[in-house]
Length: 529
Image (cartoon, helix red, strand yellow):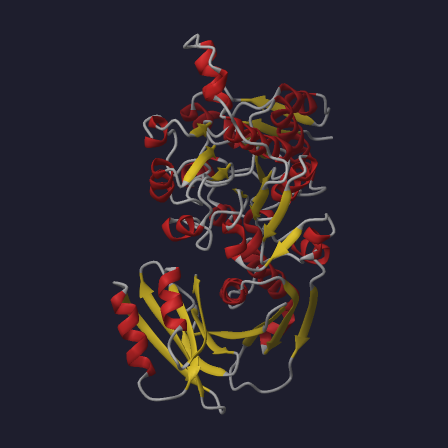
């Protein structure tokens, strides 16, 4: 029996190394202490599978050197240093370990919460470092009966909620992408209105970092909060606007903040360090012995399974070699994923069903197109927690119904793909095609015919078809210092119109509210592709 070689590029817990060493069909090369230069020049070419962490960049140089590699396991959650597209083109499977540090992150959140309500680090330092015994300086508050707002009720947020209930807190959760019963069945309150979260005593955030969640809490949101609010962020840097947070802490609007993550790390000179009403840790969300052990074990087991070709747990990409696909299909796969992602952003609500309709030669590959479309739809709310391998299981777990239809109706196009999603709030339908070899185009949104490249920041403005609307929309966008780079307009037979306006810059909540105030406005939203 030929043996398979697994190269460990960075340090992992000994438990993972032991699993690798104790399998007779595995050759373990532990290169964690070797230079990266030696790793690329002498070692990685031997690997059937590699285990990496943040110290090893899986970039073009790595992939060019790793000529025999079949899979790469990122021992942790983040894959920022992995060229996933480059790996996919070479048929290399990328896996991560997304849940091994869940409890560590949950417990760190509770640590910050408790430290904030009792000013624990400062009382500790006052006694231990300053040698001052002054009990009257350290009156805190209790978690009991406080209202806790949880933004994002996934793997971590839900567990924070359960622990908060044990402290007899009043828990309210905001997550537009889940079924409300996931919250209410735990005797907690679910809200669709973000304003309800801003009315809480303590707020903690547990969302992916994306266009929708960056700066989710900023100056306007903090202004609406209760005086003396406590904010916790053990998820991702940038979910809270750091300037707004700093201002709120200095003014006293925010009584305390517990922060584990920063926009730029390491944050050894951050202005938060100068404040005495914030508890800080250096990105310790996964830093428990149990977590590191679990990460190493799961990474080792995933590496062995993928080396043997048995399974690819938590795969983040589909191992497709370009030579194995018809050339005309590849751009359709990318297009349909973008369409799904666009549909999810346009609705921003829990998805009930996804329908994929195809016409033309692409219908032969409807199963693959459906997989890519589902990933696009669910990426908006789940980020790296969903992938091409697990998407059907994730959708099923959420009660999402998938329908695939091969249409025989002549659309007037050689090939056409349509994604329709049904949410708690609305239906949304988007269709697209490829012109030439790789010219991706959206040709229809709901009942509106368009010719739109699925790329950039876009405002979708639906309105009654009356005079002056285009001018009003342009004036408001200009007022917010945004340049319009493209403007596409579609009409239906109900005297309504849909404008898709591409802008060079971020679309703010205040801009959307001002557009909503126009008398002709039926609905407005924004997407980023």
